[in-house]
Image (cartoon, rainbow, N blue to C red; front, side, top):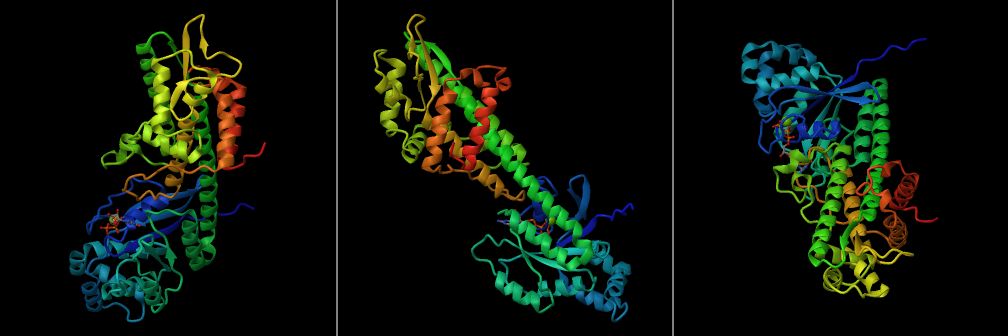
Length: 463
Ligand SMILES: Nc1nc2c(ncn2[C@@H]2O[C@H](COP(=O)(O)OP(=O)(O)OP(=O)(O)O)[C@@H](O)[C@H]2O)c(=O)[nH]1
Ligand SMILES: [Mg+2]
């Protein structure tokens, strides 16, 4: 028997002005461009809808509404407008039919109209605010619409919030189910909690919300896996990247070094772009703000000596910045008579050095060529900061306007050892790097190495 499809659940997002209603829509829809968000009152002027789908089907329609501003005066107008004494929706309709009230309370009337047309409401609260009479007036008016209301405590990531005070006040007006959901500091489980609580207020109509929660979880898991893969691909490309230079020409060596750094930095940028787009963040929309990720670009190159020294210290890959930079410099400018031990030293911590390839001589003397490649510290640094970026994006609500703050994710020693082993193997296969070989993606060896890197990045280090 064919089941009849129900219309999407209509959810009105209501509340006092400037509490983060539009921000909530941005985060729930994963759309940083939805509506207008500003730190001033009365930013949203019109009701605007957005659809949430589970798979192919739209299960929820969210409606952003203008903020309520003068609930006290509205309350008086409601008294004056009359309407059935015991019937809330009747009284609200009487107010909406009153031309004078409509003129005076244009914004408020749009909100009430939308609420009457919806199945339920999310009432957004700035939990840092004390529970003032104006909010209680708002709640009393909204309750007259006779729709289930779920209060959402926003700004709960702020240390100074008054969630307890709010819960107390809400329970006194019979609102016992309350969600805590910060629109900026995102948490998947808090979002699931919000939908779950709303579902409990809706009885059978809440089923679609369960589908929505499942869909959100699946998407998050898929994004997480795709993000790890993007980092693994970056690492294989960067580790295998090589620049060949004439060993007897210091100027060519230093130019080659610069070029290699640039190629790897550009490859890292591609990974950043991929991650931003995977998590639906738009680099351009943040460029106007002074970010470490200006134009979606990292401010420091992966070869910044100070950062590399940090990574080297943290990961035990080598000496401090001075020694490492010196070694790389010596190698780039000077003696070709360095032994393998010194070479290993040069590779370690210097960001870019001459490649020491097992089984091959460092310098192809016959051709007088030197191969330049990035070293372990640079690779681990890339891995660390891309992992930090993933973590930052997964905890970032689409309402965020502050800079993406991604430092360096720490790697544990077993993972460092596993990564270094794998990167050493990636380094001797320049043909597996898309930075050298356009057909690298067709190589099965590359694909296997990427799979293994994904596992290591996930924390599975055992062979
Ligand atoms: N830190 C932080 N800021 C937030 C949060 N939610 C909203 N904001 C900020 O609060 C301000 C108001 O957010 P909006 O989403 O425009 O609020 P609104 O309720 O839609 O406002 P009106 O449309 O004017 O009623 C903006 O500056 C947001 O960036 C939050 O959870 N944390
Ligand atoms: Mg708004």
